[in-house]
Image (tube, rainbow, N blue to C red; front, side, top):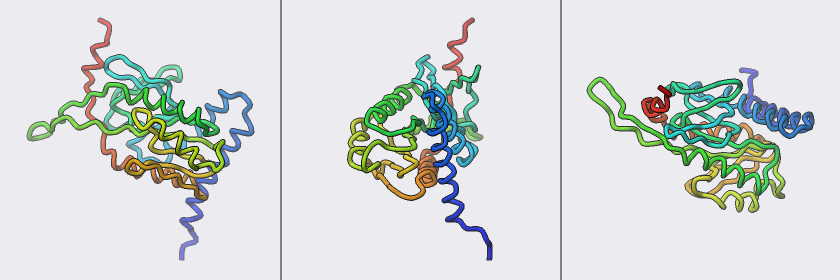
Length: 239
């Protein structure tokens, strides 16, 4: 019989994330430094455990009409079919067509932060996305429908009591349009997700692992990003 234990492995994954977030909270006094370190913990988690077709980064998102999103703490984007990623001096710009999910990452969840995250998510969803017909051996497939962009929130703690209760849900339902948050994690307490229009706020012992599995499951249903129209972006080249 093997000495390996799946429950122990899954528990260890969560404990590692929770401990790293706790260390960030205790060790860094400067808010900006603390924020950057928290984002790095979540980005490393996603880059390590999501399938390799996905990549995570702090970034701005741009569309072919020249509009930009606000800076997004964690963007999950396509690296298999999206050739257009701009990086310079630590700044990453991602085309809107490449985006699967966007998250705001902070230390503590409260009503103001939920509203702030909703505004950030809306700034991405408002961007224009192109979709070209897809050529294949016998002709072309019609343009792929645009996939829904997931929006979420990632924190270490919650200011509410209970941490994931009616107050948290009340904040979430204040924007169920462009700024809606479908999924998120409060690493010390639990995770949440939207199931057919209703929020499930789950308090459990291993929130980071539960969130990761739920995110992967939701991404599986997203399918593949559309075929980007690079000519639409090329129009901005200065001649």
